[in-house]
Image 1: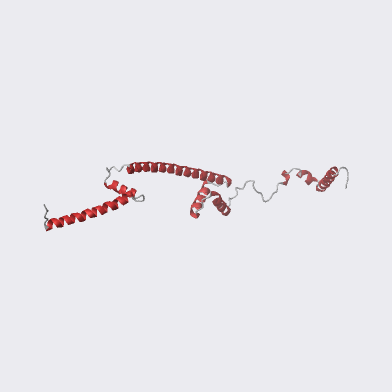
Image 2 (image 1 turned 120 degrees about the horizontal axis):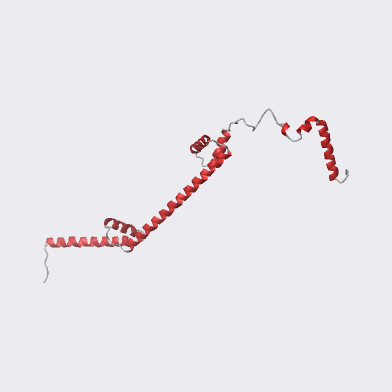
Length: 190
């Protein structure tokens, strides 16, 4: 027996058919995105955000593995960064100490040097020290480094003999040289 529908039932039926078609199109598009190698993981991540208790099988396993690998990578990267920073700090400390000893710089001079290094963006103590200490030479402490009035000849070996008789000393040196030359030439002039 044929079924007769009212106009309202036909309108309702057509609306449901249109909704079913729309749902089918949405399902096909969602399946494309869900199974896409480029966008599938993002779609699954959005699904997990909205439905955290949903079981997505291999995606959940992959997510846990990726999270663990990311954690390990971060731990290794942090350790490597800390090691590089420690080595750099030790190197800078050794450079600082060597420069301070080489230039006999005070702590105040080293502080001024480091301030200048920051201001002029110089990362090498050697270069900065050469620049700064050439422009600011160390003041002499008045020790025995240099005495402009005396050459201290009297402290040299043989000075007393030379000063007693300079002419005689000169003759003796000439004769000594001639005798050495004779010995070297084996008994005579050639």
